[in-house]
Amino acid sequence: MLTEEKVLEALKEIKDPDLQKSIVDTGGIRELKIKEDNVSLKIALAKTGTAEQMQLQQQVVQAVKNAGADSVGLRFDNLTDEEIEKAGGVKSNQGSSLLSEDSTTEFIAIASGKGGVGKSTVSVNVATSLARMGKKVGIIDADIYGFSVPDMMGIEQRPTVKAERIYPVERFGVKVISMGFFVEDNAPVVWRGPMLGKMLNNFFSEVEWGELDYLILDLPPGTGDVALDIHTMLPECKEIIVSTPHPTAAFVAARAGGMAIKTNHEILGVIENMSYLESKVTGEREYVFGQGGGERLSEELKTELLGQIPLGQPEIDEDDFAPSVYDADHPIGKIYGEITKRITEKVGK
Image (cartoon, rainbow, N blue to C red; front, side):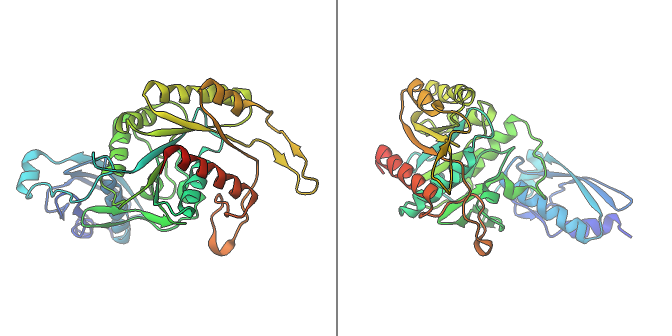
């Protein structure tokens, strides 16, 4: 039978990431209720809304289930200043931040006006193509509600935490961090804007990226809280706008471009995705979503059309599964190669 004592015993091994002491010893167990092997917990931490909190959440759920619980409900609270001081105070992180003044990393945000235009596919292929050119590349899946980068790149492992620093997962030479690593079983993220901003800031400051030439940011579609936070955090960020050829998609994408312009972000160009469908038999092109949207959008934003990506699907390798990454010698992979070559020429790095 599951008891309160068993649950507390299971939680003794879990440490507050900022105090490095057991959440039981810090007085962090605010509430503990058990009903028919369903456990409800309220846990207080020195800091909430952080990437470490998400790691701890996974540890708590696993530990309590191992103790015999069928399900675990979690809520979080903050320890008081007195409790934090009594526990020895918050341990400082000793790591470099991409947001520091001496950072030489080029930030490139991939944005779109609406969902469903292939923005994340463009993001992962631009990142992997840059890595093939010998660049040191990272990618932040900043589409926190609609994270998809780990799945697209065939990533199954999760980041590791050492000495209070998060080490990203590396795949195809690209270092990857995503909200998808910190939720259980594809669960929905039910967070409001301020907490999203904290999480994004932690992706920059608490992840051990090492030296990067480029950091690609896969933004959520539209002009909401996360996009605004990115524009505020990264005044020197450059942007690529993704659209389809359809006039409505291009019209909506112009709003994302307008936000970039208003916040003094440099628009590197427009990528038109799903431009056409090419027959493997005849080579004839069928313009499924119309024509001209990308060109009109680039003209409106006074930038260039970096490339037109046709409808397609990478070759699936069951032994090295990555459902959205094109090989360098694939026809579409070659188009991405030309796009990233143009990006490096424009950035000068």
